[in-house]
Amino acid sequence: MTDDIRSRTDSGPRPQPGRRGHRRRNSLLLLVGALVVGALIGAAAVKVLSPPPQITADRPLSTAVVTAGEVGSFVTLAASAQWPTAGALTNLAQGVVTEVDLKPGQTISKPQRVYRVDERPVFLAAGSVPAFRDISGATKGRDVAQLQRLLNALGFAAGNADGTGDSRLTRAIERWQRVSGFPADGVVHGADIIFTPKLPTRLAVAMPDANAAGALTGSSPPVLRIGARLQGGEAVLERLTTDPQITVTTSKEQAAQFPAGTSVIVRFGSKSWRGRVSRVDQVSDQLVLYLANEKGTAICRPTCSGLAVGGSSVLYADIEVVKAAKGLSVPAVAIQTGPDGSAFVVTDDGTEHPVTIVAGDSGVVIVTGLPEGARVRLSSDAPR
Image 1 (tube, helix red, strand yellow):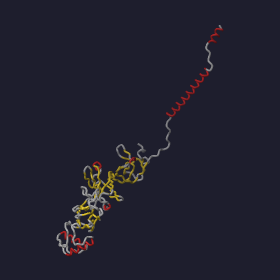
Image 2 (cartoon, rainbow, N blue to C red; image 1 turned 60 degrees about the vertical axis):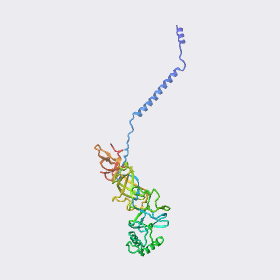
Image 3 (tube, helix red, strand yellow; image 1 turned 180 degrees about the vertical axis):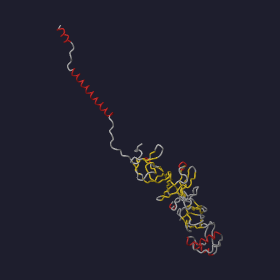
Image 4 (cartoon, rainbow, N blue to C red; image 1 turned 90 degrees about the vertical axis):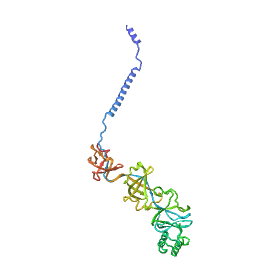
């Protein structure tokens, strides 16, 4: 029996070399893996469950100082200066313009030559009777009396201004002609003098396309220019009003912001003039804002003469949208609103101060209720 048992035992399966060592290695790997996973879970738990670090330093608050200031809002638009005409002056000379002595917008204060046609001078003088014929010592009429007064005023001794020509008038005409560049024939031709109602007067050469308001636009060549051929009977000069009209043309929608009375500042180079919108007129599908000073006269007074005739001056109009206000100012972000809708600010020591908002624009408000120099917190940092 012993042999049988030994035989069965010996014949049964025997453990293979190295298997027990393999099991030990597996157990060690499992243990190490568990420790690593546990360590990671522990680290994650610490990261997620640990409370945030305490902030021990006070965070500085943004503040602003209450200072004197001014707020307001303007819209800047292009403006134009146009000189309305007070009447045209008609040329009677026929021929080619060979010289123009008149500068645009020039003020003529005394009788003088203004241009030449075929080298014959054309003078401008004050008078109510337009030239319509030749005058000599044998001519009578109101136009003769007007010429007598003119020659006497120039120092040429034409005799009594009674409208009756004589030898004294003839001699006076000849002396004037020699001085003025005419042939001394003793006859003033109808085309030699253009009479204007009064002197001094501000003149410009006429434009063929003066607009409906009678203003000179300067978009076409003037009628009176060197080389132009005149037929006689055409308007060559324009009497200008004393002051220009300064206007802004804009759309109906935008003009609704600028009713009559709106404040405006007009800028021209280094000059600026304050005034208002005096009236608003509709022209086609646009609106024209007329600008004037507080007295209702030209906004550019007393320096309008610097503006060119013909629309070549570049002007800008700053038109008020938000009425300007002066006072103590703070940033708009410093204003907070209470439950009842009242406004207040918080000073840097945490005290609430009720304020009244006077005006505001572009992130700045004018307020009352605060002393100048106080420091206020900006609402983004102030306690809610």
